Amino acid sequence: MRKMQRSNQSSVTEFILLGVSDKPWMNILLFILFLIIYMIALVGNLILITVSRLDSRLHTPMYFFLSNLSFLDICYTSSIVPKMLETFLAKKKTILFRDCAAQMYIYLSLGETECILLAVMAYDRYVAICHPLRYTIIMNWRVCIIIAVGTWTGGFLLSIVHVAFTLTMPMCGHNVINHFLCEVPAVLSLACVDTFINEIVIFVVGVLILLIPVFLIFLTYIYIISTIMKISSADGRSKAFSTCTSHLTVVTIFYGTAIFMYMAPKSSHSPDKDKMISVFYLIITPMLNPLIYSLRNQEVKGALRKITRKLGRQ
Image (cartoon, rainbow, N blue to C red; front, side, top):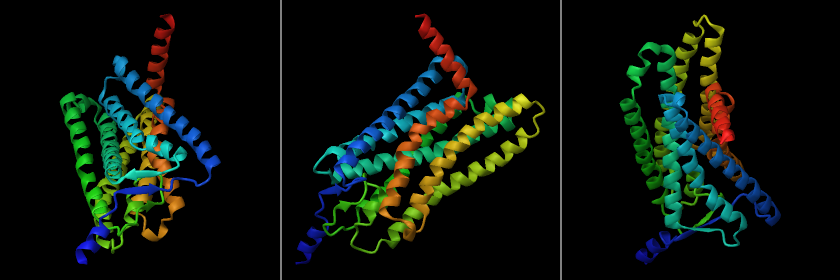
């Protein structure tokens, strides 16, 4: 009898995703909307990567990490949006357990990599502005590649903890996820046992991957702003601020929504609110990143004009 009960507890082979809306006409509108957002995100990030590679003036550590961010955002949205678009139109909104695990692992790995990468980009700005004469020595290409590899490796290793502590919980046959993807809080709510230990572990990982990087970014920008204010040239101050404000805008949007999702008390969560927050940091932010960096960055705009003129002559 006990063996049969254990079998029933672990018998979930697929999940049902309730999605964003249960109204067919709304799902069609949302399909069109998110398809457009997805295409903008792909095109915008591909353009940023291409411009960074084609213009020799952008072959610097800052744009190397920015290209990493753009590539990461392409993978990030591609791990979520195609399945999301499918659920808008499909009658049977299901996802296999293994596919759910894969989706959770991939988007968490990429999200945690982005958390580390944004902190690395803040450090790069700190060295460039506060120690300009030593910038090429400190941020040489060997160091940049080691940092990039370490960032991606760290993100993919830390996410194992989240996935393991979420999908190993007994669910007693509960398989209806009130979400459009296998988001950790939504899947964890299906567990039929106390999840306090799991939530503590997830909180600790959240401190390591969210709060500590945010603190380091905040500390870094205290030094950056104090250094910028000492620059005598108004143009110099303006240029320094322009590269920093782009990064700070991205940091505020991404970390703000991610901290709410993973660090806020359980009582503050609701399915509709969680879906909205997830849409923002998983889908909207990767679309906004290339727009923020291109619209507020004179070097990127100059490189875009140069490449456009070359293409026009051809």
